[in-house]
Image (cartoon, rainbow, N blue to C red; front, side):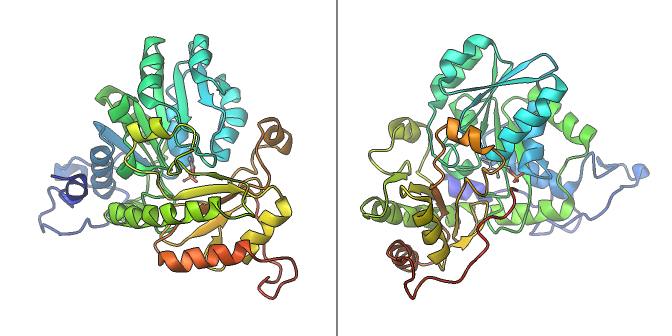
Length: 388
Ligand SMILES: *Cc1c(COP(=O)(O)O)cnc(C)c1O
C-alpha cells in the first residue's frame, strides 16, 4: 500500500455498535463506570480523541500519540520529560512561542535551555533532551536527522523534532531515529485554519506512556469536538499538501528571479543550504517560502498589496497566507535578541494554499511590482497584530 492509501485505512470508531463510517463526536465528560468500557472521564481518555491519536501514531510512525489542546501544550508535554536541574539543547532558530516557553517558563521550573548554532558541539553539555525543528520556521534551516539522532543517543539524550512545517506526509522524524515527533496540529495537520491543537508521537511505548500520563495529569488533552475536526482535516492532508507544494515549487523560482527579492529560503531551490540532507530525510520541500527584500518598507508594502494571501499568523491552511515574522509569529523574541541572532526584519513568509497556481503567481508578481503611491496600493491594514 502507498502512504496515501494507508493514510485513509483506519477504523473510524472501533467498538461502536452502530459501525459509523465517520468518527462520531463523543461529547461527554464522563462514562458510566458500570458500563464495562475502557473510558471513565474525558480528560483521561475519550473515543473521538483515541481514534485521532491512533491515526497520528500511524502516520508519524510511532507506537503511541497524544493529542493536545495546542502545539504549545504538546511542546510543554515534551519538555516535562526533563526534570529540574536538567538541560534541554535547542536549535537557535525556533518558533517564537517555543522560544518564549523555553526562556520564560522552563527556567522557573529549574530546567536550563541552551540554544546552539552547532548542536553537535553543544551535546558536550549532556542535555537530557535535544529539541529541534527541521526545516526551521521561518528560515528553513536543515539539520541532518540521522546524524543528530545518532549523536544525541551516543550522549544519552532524547531527540524531539517539531515536525509542524513538513508534516508527517513529507517527513517522519521517528523513521530517521528521533524519539519524539511534535506538532502544532493547528498548521498542516488540521489544514483549514479552524482548529487549535497539538500532538506528540513517541517512538517507544514507555515514552508514549509518560507523555499520556502528563496529558491526563495536566488536563491538556484535545477536546472531543476539536479531535473530530482534526481527524477530519487530516484525511485530506496528502491531497492538500501535494497541491500546495506543487504551487510553491512554481512560486519559489519566480521570487528568486525577481529583482525586488534579495534572497529566498526554500529547500526546493537547488542552492538551498542543507538541501541534500533534507531530501535524504523528507519526501518534498513543502509549501512555506520565506524571502528577504533588503527593506522593511518594501516588505511591508508587498504584504499589504497581496490580495489572495491574507495577512495571517500561522501557516498550513488551504488558503494562502502571508506574514512578517518579526512583527507576528516571532514578535515574542525581543528585538535585541532578534538582532543578535541576525533575524532579518524584512523577512516575508508565505504559506501557499490550494488556490489556482496562476492566480497566486499573478498576485505575487503584481504585489512585488507595486510601487509606493501606485493605484494598486491599498489603504492601511493591520500590520502589527499582537504576538500569538
Ligand atoms: C505554531 C507552531 C507551534 C505552536 O503551536 P500552537 O498550535 O500555536 O500552540 C509550535 N511549533 C511550530 C513550528 C509552530 O509553527
